[in-house]
Amino acid sequence: MLDVLVVACGGYLLGSLSGSLLLGRLRGIDIRSMGSGNAGGTNALRSVGWSFALGVIVIDLGKGAVAAGLLPAVAAWLPGEGSVRLTLGTSAGFAAVIGHVWPLYFGFRGGKGAGTAVGAIAVLAPWCIIPLLLVWILTIVGTGYVGLATILAALSLVPAMWMLAPGPVPLALGAFAIATASLLTFTHRSNLARLRSGTENRFEKARLLKRR
Image (tube, rainbow, N blue to C red):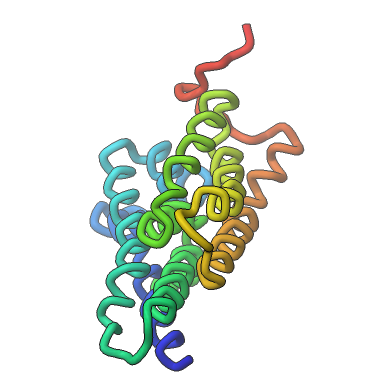
């Protein structure tokens, strides 16, 4: 249990390194005071531009991948079999997402966690990445709603984890899928509220299926 707590703390601290806030400091801006106020890739793109958003995405994906893959590898000297190391990976990966949402270094005001979650998923359950991307892209193309696309992609993680896995899904991985889908749905609750009220912003350039 101690090894899980140590690796999870490391994942949280790593996740607290918000890409948009770190790069924003280099430019003398706080992305949380711009656009939607969210410290994530979508707001970075809308408020600052493609190059800035790309840097944000690379950092946020990278920290999720490092937390899920490298931290457990560093702790590999600890006694335990593969299942134990998988528990370390899922714990660190999920903790990194929590760190992104509530970053220690930035007053616990971060992003919504999707990019960091994708980085962790790519390491822990790579078979889920293509289905998640397909759901995300099809929703964007059909509706133009980035928040809705992210929610649906997050929810699709749960069936994809079990239906497409190359073998039995370990308990740690199943718990990670359910917890991650639940957390991302929670962090996008404001998007759901705006969808209900009809005030959610569309990404019109990506919306190819428009009503005429």
